[in-house]
Image (cartoon, rainbow, N blue to C red; front, side, top):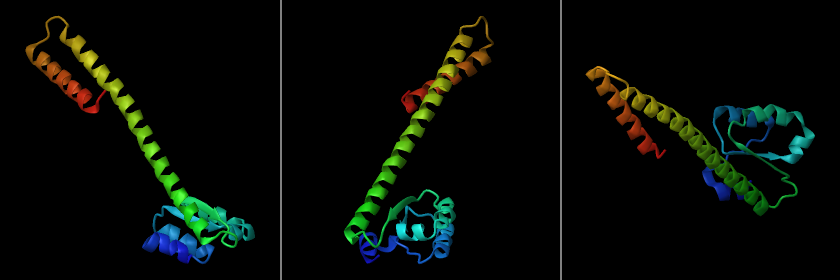
Length: 146
């Protein structure tokens, strides 16, 4: 625990029991939850009790009895790095999905408004409003890079 405290500083909180861990998980959000494999082997229900409260925390399973301090720090760093990579990938996927949805909507707006402008004899105020819609859709397309 001292090696983790040294490596991660004040960002680390310990819990000596399942009940204490559950209390901490309910109080705030964590980047990672480090679980002792021996505790889980001794009390299989502990994971079932704790896991629903992990939130977005990455679980890290270690055997404190067998793992060196350096390995423990390395495992936590790897888990946190993996978490950040996964978050970035999820953010990029969400942005791409939104961009595709917006592309379809903006294209539909542009096409419909341009076709409506070509219709025979629209009142002047309707033409002006359709031109405004076209201009706004073009601006959206340009700003979104679609």
